[in-house]
Amino acid sequence: MSKSPFGKGGVKHKVLSCPRDKTVLDQQEQGEATLDVCSKCGGQFFDSGEMFAAFGIKADPTYWDRPETGGPTRTGDVPCPRCEAHLLTQEIRHEGQAVEIDRCGKCGGLWLDAGEATRIIAIGEKMAPVIAAEKAQAQKELDALGDDAFGSPGLIARFLGLFQKKS
Ligand SMILES: [Zn+2]
Ligand SMILES: [Zn+2]
Image 1: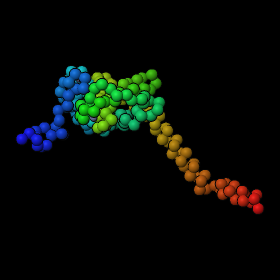
Image 2: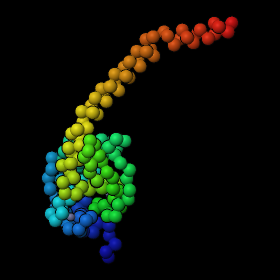
Image 3: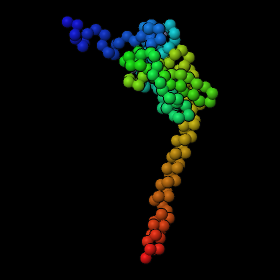
Image 4: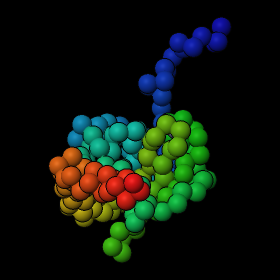
């Protein structure tokens, strides 16, 4: 009788509990996202993409995976509130600031302990102009490369030169 996959409490309405203290998480509106927050320890759970939805570009997780900010991951000792896979602990650091976050490699969820969201966003704010400058520089180099490859006869002339020497 209880075998039905459509029993009460579908996947979408799954009650999440805090990976630290097992308190049932409360839902909280933040920006465009609905976060799951622990009223006991202040930790927050973000489903994949919710960090961006809640805080915008300065919380874009792609910043964190850069070699100068993202440290190696190691398997942590608490389960993901969403899918129960082990969360992976990773240290994100930039200019003397460091935050240890917990990410889920399976569902892409993110667990931040109290205060960590503020710190990771502060790092994101510092990284944003660096990333923007790099993108502009990369575009410039791409443009310059295009001019050289298609506009200059230098390469073709040198190529022809090799044959002329041989004969
Ligand atoms: Zn908690
Ligand atoms: Zn997960």
